[in-house]
Image 1: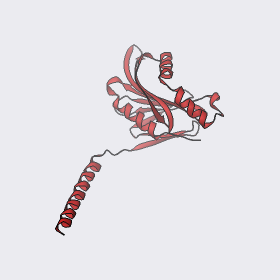
Image 2 (image 1 turned 30 degrees about the horizontal axis):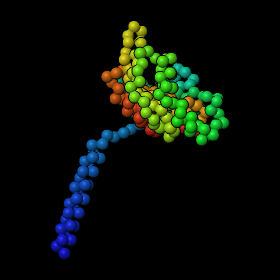
Image 3 (image 1 turned 135 degrees about the horizontal axis):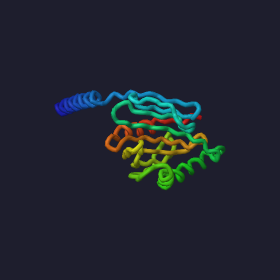
Image 4 (image 1 turned 60 degrees about the vertical axis):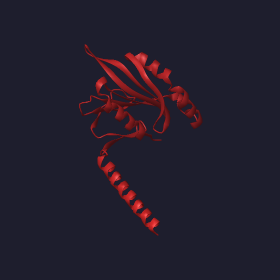
Length: 194
């Protein structure tokens, strides 16, 4: 009987210690608030950080432009370009295209056409809107008038609803934490509406 009482004390002590540690971890966890973007036109919805604001897109393929309101100067955009050749493809064929189309060479070719002094730092396979996707972290030089700004960016791409969806988040080189966090948050909360 003494052995069982000792075990009960150890069990109770362990439970109390675990409760204290969990309460401390919960108290230290940041409170995450967010906004929701939804577009019936582009068949997409996702959450984004509360401290970001929506801006009017400049191109018809851009679903939304997002700007951080803190001092990070970070921005994100979500594009949804209609690709007629995707219409009518089976889910099996689309899955195969997702696995083979957005590889590192796709991003290299795309960037060489549109960006200055670009270098891909990292390529990986990921998910975007619960679909298989390619993703890259890269740097490029942005020219604003006579000023050159070195930028770190994150981009992912996939196919859904007869479109190529891309998410691109970036910020000046020494302030990229907010862009990286927004990229992961938006990418992981995206749903394609059909």
